Image (tube, rainbow, N blue to C red; front, side, top):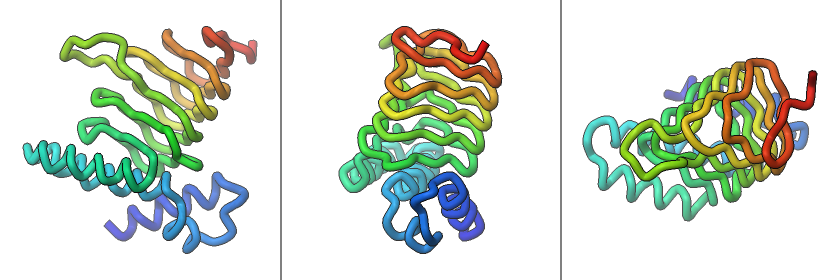
Length: 170
């Protein structure tokens, strides 16, 4: 567990030029705290302690401004820069080495009990205030520009931006 905490703080130190020391990241970065809190809530959720998982995730949201459903799946070294306003829905799947900025929404597009939130593959970067809706896949090492609205799959390595999001790196 301590190895994972160190891994998370080092990932944020590497991605955020404002991070002067990893100790600062561990103590004062709400996005890192939200990911750590999610790991606890997710562990509880997977052991059928769902009410406690939801209550704990709510406490994490109150403290960090980041809302991650306890059933969502997060990979390793996921970083949330600044954090405030990030929402990650119940069936979202986030791969390894994903970096998100504040205001990102990984939202659903139906009220049916099915896979209804985005899947982000490894190495994806999501810009501030981007909204990704529905059971879509953002391919490995893709990037979504700030303020974009994404409702369709994004190819691996592509960069998309705009409302609605379109490929901009052709």
